[in-house]
Image 1 (cartoon, helix red, strand yellow):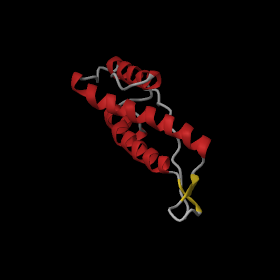
Image 2: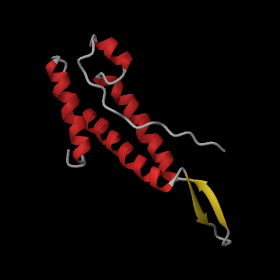
Image 3: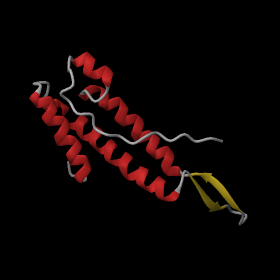
Image 4: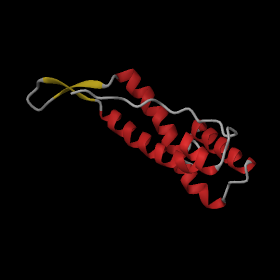
Length: 120
């Protein structure tokens, strides 16, 4: 858990507490839940950077011309977002996983950032 910031620790503790309360927690979930929490915290961090910098950025190429390219943080964000979606399913953080696990509405949904669309 040393890689988790305050938000990541909050996600970890919240999901763990919810699963423990429903008697669904297993100690083998620790590493996967840490990965999920890290992916969530990276999504928040990258989203803030993308909101500040924009979806596209201006760079200077080798010939000295300024060109507009997609912000590389968007692709990194999408990678962490997809990872968090895959792991969220295991911990009852999606509607389908709550139904599969037999959870009514006891688990609070952890807010995740919206996905970006890049048009070319």
